[in-house]
Length: 293
Image (cartoon, rainbow, N blue to C red; front, side, top):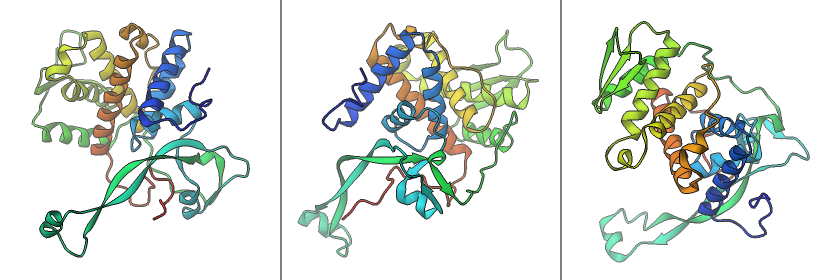
């Protein structure tokens, strides 16, 4: 039974994440390996969204490619088709907390109060396939060639103090991560080099200190490959399927799987943010509609 869709009361953010992870485990254990591929693909498309909302979008509409709220689509010259079923996500509720006298004395007196997050509410977004209207400007697509993204990724790696070198022989490996230093096998295609560098960068960002000791080598490799899948998909590279045996790495442990998926999403988001300059005409807010005052 789908506990999310059948819930009669609003679920908290944590409950939605837990229910989605449980559903993913059930699908993978039932042999539906495409469930993980669908979820990681959703990560690549919606890296501006939170972990919980990515899971909600992937669960409700795995084919979604670009989502926005009703009024956001209207502002872009498109209109939601009659009868379309919205994708439910969580949107922040922002309130105002009156500052203490001490806080007021330390800040600009023109702004005596400050906005605070007071909770979340259900909101609905719609995929572009559920809308009609003017064509949207197409983002530059990359097919088998990372283009400038390889240079941007290289700059990102070096900006984090990570040494990057190329080698003619890595003993059969395409790349290696040594904790502060990455080696990449020379002679790869640009697409392979990009994917390998994302994989090794993911190791550098993901697997340090305490968490590294709590995971197996197989889990660490799978996480890095999942990040490479998400980032490669986002920049238009042709990718394979996600691992069908992913769930078995966690022996059915939902909390470990949830942690792993969340760090994959967060790491991919950090890398993608470094690759893509801000696009001013893109709707990236998770708030599909303005919250009434």
